[in-house]
Length: 450
Ligand code: ADP
Ligand code: ASP
Ligand code: MG
Image (tube, protein in one colour):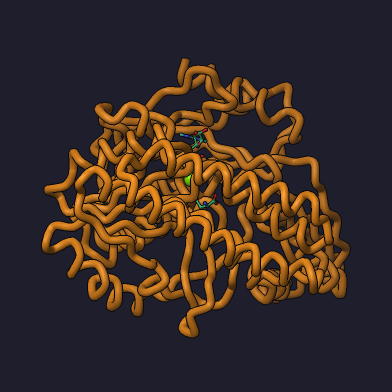
């Protein structure tokens, strides 16, 4: 079997969904499980919806609900030709919106938006898109079944940044999906969403449908995980920054994991982890250019010597500088610091240290005030918010003599800090001024790729 994941832009309207279905048709013999994101921008709107209701902005709340409902009903009208099916799906979408409206009214009345409610609200986009895809497949005579992903995607109760319970998922996923795909039906399920043991809706972090696809791939021992998106594959830089990035044909799991972790939006940072466990190739493909081979991510990529593969970035990071003269010659400084990050479930991207000083960078920082308060009990803490992180990913970088010289020579005019290479042979990361980030990436790209 294979997993086929379609991202938001690949299901953004009737034409895109029709296109996705044409792609699914070419793979029916490979027993696909289709995983879909919400239609493009829907999750953003749903989050906005929850927030508007919470602050009592009734007008905005209604506007968002109306726009979302109408946009999806329009897709149904344009996509489904059979009148009975048209009626079924329209009724279904209206009832999903009725339920959403009830939840939103609750948020409005209580002026309270917990992580749990927001996870529920933001999960609705995937429920809607997959219902439409399933009906459209039936409309075209393709046998399929809509599957509630909550039946097998069990997670902890970190509602909006849930962690999967791999053992339970490995057991339950084949139980639910095999009876559908074995006889030849397509299974259509939701990305991004999970469920606690008690059945409460959770979601992965933003962009998490890629992660769903690879978790299902792992649990089902898939031949391949296909990630269908809006670019030709993994590129040498973010195409929104660099005008003509190069396409990477093949890349190793390790390099892809670094790329995703350090900001390449094309893959959710956790995607590669489940694929590595079962050594399942992941292919990044363009739904607007389906004949193109895309990028293959696999365990070993044969290469001689050294190459830079891609330059990634995280634009909005925070740099935390922790200074504690008391810690000179004392041990346990780092342990105390990381215990605090652990307590607030915050992961750190880059770290540089000296005897009494530790600098680190964060990009998920929802409990930042609590973290700073606790750090301040034994150190001086300064936060910088005008910085970005850049990461150069390639193979054997550590062993390439003179590579740092070449990199930093071309970046001579920029302010660079927190240079870090030690741990990995495939990445070199550093921090730049945020207003210089694009320019630094363009300069590096020109030097190494153009
Ligand atoms: P989807 O909705 O299909 O999940 P995303 O928007 O999450 O798509 O990811 C695809 C986008 O990632 C591309 O349109 C591109 O702008 C961006 N991107 C950033 N860095 C890279 C990169 N190195 N390679 C490819 N795409 C990248
Ligand atoms: N719809 C979710 C989001 O926008 C998940 C995804 O698209 O991967 O974050
Ligand atoms: Mg994505």
